[in-house]
Image (cartoon, rainbow, N blue to C red; front, top):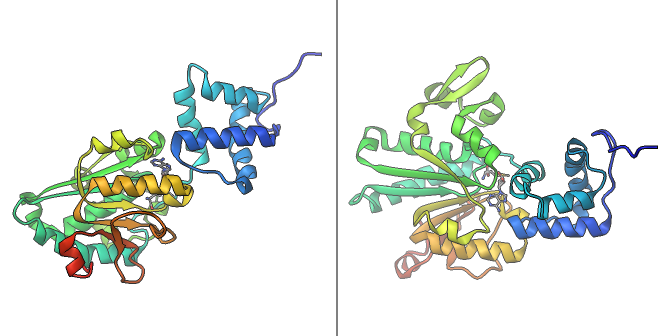
Length: 297
Ligand SMILES: C[S@@+](CC[C@H](N)C(=O)[O-])C[C@H]1O[C@@H](n2cnc3c(N)ncnc32)[C@H](O)[C@@H]1O
C-alpha cells in the first residue's frame, strides 16, 4: 500500500529530540528561546506547515530548513508562524504620554541647533509603533515640522509584518486604543479599513533586521531614542545582554530607551538607568551630565 503524506488536518508528532533541534535552530537564527514548556505551542504552530509541504516528519522539515535550497525563505515562513506580532497604535498610553509630554520637549530643545532627530523602533511588527511616534512628533512640532529633519526607522525580522507597515492600511482592531479625534485627523476610512495620512507615512521607513545581526544594525547609525517593546521577553539572558550592548552602541549619549511593560535591563551590564516614573518603562543612557541631573528628563 502506498505511504500517504499527511494532509494538513493530520497531526505529525514532534519528538523531544526534534523539539530540541528546532529550539536550537530558532535560537541561533533569531535569538528567540522557546522554553521546554512551549513544545506544544511550537508543535501546533508548525504542524500545519508540515501538512502544506506534504512532509511526514519533523526530521524532513529540519533538513529542509537547515540544508535545503530554500532554507532562508522557509526560515522567514516559519518565523511568520512562530512569532507573536501583537501590536496596535497608541499601545501603552501612559508610556507614550511620557514620551510625548516629557521626553520629546527635552529632546527638541537639545536638538534645536541641528534640528535632526532619529528614532528607532527595533521590533516594530506591522508598523503601528513607529507610526504612532510619527503622529506624536507631527502634532508636537506642528508647522515647525518643515524645519526639522526627522527620521523614524522601523525594523523587524518578519518581512510579512513589514509589508503591512509599508502598505499603511489598518483594520479597526489596530486602532482600538486610538482616540476618535486622532483617527479622523490622521486616517482615511475606506471600505472598513483605515489608510494612514501620507505625510505621516513619509516620516517612517522600514528595513528588515534581525536583532541578532549586530553589524547590520550598526549600519543604521546612531539614534536619540530606541523603542524596543515586547520582544526582549522572547529572548534568553544571553540575547538580552546582546541587545543591551547593541543599544549602548546605537544610542546617542543621554539617549532614551523604552521597553515593554514586562521587560527590564536589571541584572544586565549596561550604562542605562531606569527613570523612576511609574509606567514609563523608560531607561536613559547615562553620561556625566545626566548622572548629575539624576537621570530625569
Ligand atoms: C509582540 S511584537 C511587538 C511589536 C511592538 N514593538 C509593540 O510593542 O507594539 C514582537 C515583534 O518582535 C519581532 N522579533 C522577534 N524576534 C526578533 C529579532 N530577533 N529581531 C527583530 N525582530 C524580532 C517579531 O517579528 C514581532 O513583530
